[in-house]
Length: 519
Image (cartoon, rainbow, N blue to C red; front, side):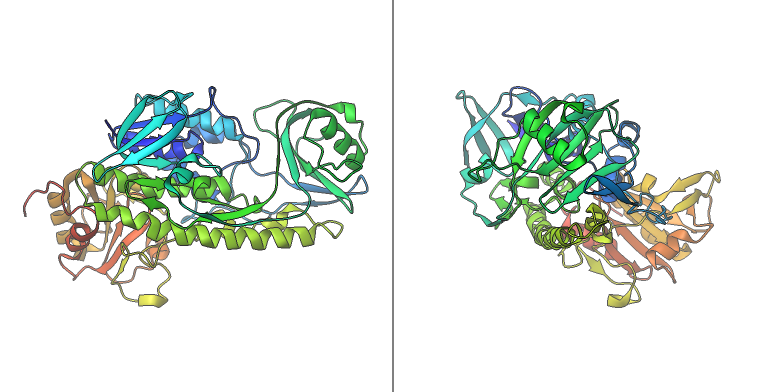
């Protein structure tokens, strides 16, 4: 029996598997397809997902295989009329090192994640279709199409919008499907276009969009409104239908488009499961929520689901935390999914309005909300505010923990806060010399489960906030304790004088059963 069985080997399942495996949790990940799935829809991680990928240790590979978002070139009646860069004037800041996402083929991102997973000795099991499941108070059993059974302590359905796991659980998937023209997409090769732009043709009777695929010499992501035949029925996507759409809207020869692959048609769906957990089985990614592609939040929301769930499953499976910690997955992620549906619906409406006017395009879908950097869980039972400033404070418990450049107090070397957060542990930051006692006792009590760092503590150990970026990002005035969760969200903010508050919080929420060294 394994600790966690993951069903579905897309980005959500792979992120979760990597996070569990690095925590030495027994994990199996199964995929019903006989070969590794390839998808053309998701175009890459947003800034918050880049932070997750950095924490997992694969950011370098992702950056090397991807490109920055491209300027968008808009056309009307086949002629270029406007170039727009949604990120013009944007730049990284000390607290947010990634101000924009990256373009990378989903299948390439999955290759990188599978390679990382393989370093932990875990491999995707292909051709393993789950057709049934049963669960008891202590375990879950999945039944595969061939009759094999897999036992696990927990199961996570990451198997997409048509999730078998969700259906087997009987969880409703309520919402709506947008009526109107269906979209088609696929990967194609085109040699007639400048690869320095994302080309967008919007006409009164349809649209074609072509974005170059990084890492290819002539590959492009193709999106368009689906053709209809004389009777008004949708024409199935094919290379010939893509060529007709291409020639009609671009004015270029249809024959210059070739090697169409990964073809699919879709309508915009907005649906969400009413529960993300049934006993020992969880839902994540598209299995839990689907929405418009406007804003590019589909894959990214799934990545955040996985990063939220991974550390909670790991602590529970290892016996360090009680089962109540797992309740906070739905408590935190279900409201985020509902908000994501609202954001993407709003961005879709705005984009459809924008493209009716010459010069309007997909940049309308890009807002601060789609970066993922503003999300958090202030309402969570895991969030505890106690510092000065209260509800008016810039940073509160539940928020994403900001980055900041500091220096190693001993060597003087540059150290980013994200470097101290990276890995399967809590991080306790003690701002000011007054936090020394709490840092020392927390380290002794919890060992490697909590990494304690003094910031401007006055000694040669810890960090020096020499430029003030950390204090600014965290809104620190007087000596303050900040506890950061393993998924890099703030768990607690408290004055240094509140002795014992860190241990009380950890024992109550996440590490109450851990093996501790007495004071």
